[in-house]
Image (cartoon, rainbow, N blue to C red; front, side, top):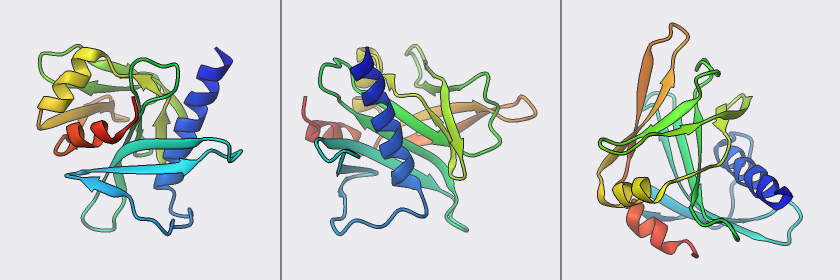
Amino acid sequence: MMRRIFSTFLLALAGSLLISNTAVADEAKPVTYGDWGYKCDKSPDGNQQLCYVFQNVTKKEGGQLVLGARVARREGQGDPLIVVTVPLGSLLPPGAALVMEGIEPIKMTYFLCAQEGCTTIATAITPDMLAAMKKGENAVVRVAAPNKQVVGLPLSLKGFSKAMGALKK
């Protein structure tokens, strides 16, 4: 249980570092597969290599983050884990949901809100959702706005299957 909590924390930390404007740029650029990138970082203690696939959706004007998604596999965890970051101002109690037509949505609880946005707890992607994402073109991350309207943030799946193939099983 402690190892799962630690892995979840590391995945969330890696995601927040990925989208942080203050993070120092690595010398190595991430490998890209369509709209998805693949990257590995060292764990904070330097003992592990943390690899993940990611996509950052930003506004054309100003480059503000609209949606950040990171997916990783962790040792001892069967299903891959997803972490998303959405803009500040999203209602926290309902959480976020990864949605694709015909598949049960994956509900995600928020873990932390910072200057970059609100980040969810690492949540397992079900086998049905993973299969649909590998075959699909788009998914949606649904969040609730302060006026309680549900907003769908688009997530391209172009290159997702190849990017996931790059992750160790």
